[in-house]
Structures are given as C-alpha cells and as structure tokens.
Length: 226
Image (cartoon, rainbow, N blue to C red; front, side, top):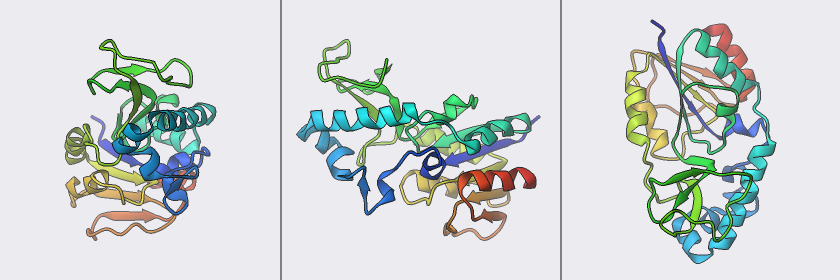
C-alpha cells in the first residue's frame, strides 16, 4: 500500500507559470485593491467590475501552461498516494492530470449561482456575462471564495492532513487563514517538507525539512530526497 502524501500548494507554484497574485505588490492584484474585487461587498457594489476582473484572470489562466513543478507533483503518484490541497484558483494541477485535487478557494473556470452556492457550472470559454443566470434566474458569479466568506472544503482538508503519512507545503507563505492552519493538524512525528524561497516560520521544530527554493527547483531537490 502506498503512503499518503498530502500537498498544500499556493501561489508560488502558479507564479512560475506567469500567474500573478494579489500578494505580488503591496496588496494590489493586477492594479486593483483586493477589497475592490475579492469581497462580497465589492460584488454587491459593482458586479460588472468584479465580473470583468475575473474574466480577465480566467483568460490569463487559460493562456498559462503548467510548469515542471506541476508535472513533478504528478510524477510523485508513481510512488505515493498523492492528495493535492490547493489555495490556487487556477486549473494547472488538473491540466497535468493529477488524480486528486481539492480547491480551498474555488476554481476560476467555474461559475456558481448567487441564489444557491451548491449550484456550480463549468464555464464554456473565457467569460461569465452579465445576464448569465442559474436555473432559478439568479446571476452567475465566479466560483471563488472571497475574503470574508466561509471556506467550504476546510473540514475535508483538515481530515486529509490528519490522515497523511507525509506532507509537503509548496509555494505558500502560510499567511492566509484558515488554509495556513492546516499544518497544525499534521502529526509532528511524521515528516514535513516545505518548499519556498523564504524560510516559512513554524512552531514545530521536529521532522521538518526546509528547501529554500522556488517551486520547480525545490521539487527537483525533493524528488532526490524521496
């Protein structure tokens, strides 16, 4: 039986595919303040602005290509039962064929109903248009967990971390909660690997191996260790 390897991935892995995040520059995301495009209040204040913003982000995602770090995570499935928990809203893990992916903050290639959060639809093409509605007649919005909204998959993610034999944290500075708190549920007697250019602070001191590198270089080193 293969060991269970849980991966928590963040913006750093997508950055190597050219996708920017709001943390790239003083809290601005592509020139916008986060509170203007990534909150429910922003949506209620200016739906068209928010919709257009995510339509452009979706276009960027569809034009981007997975990088070697994504492919190496897929390659780990030859040896381990790999579960990816990602904070990223892109579909780059899916596009290399990773078998098991849990999105904490939603998926930008999907839309959801503003009437019923459980109604989720795959988007055909790049855009959700104003006037695109669910079967109950409500406007569709991006399937993104905005700041201040509940993270529906956090309980499942916690359970997966608790059951893991090995854990890898890659491309995240663990600043956004509740995702950042997942590491606390990983057994300190088991091995934790952390790939990030900067050494991420941890309260635990045992069974932790830091690889201070960008995602792809760090994955190359990790493959040697494993």
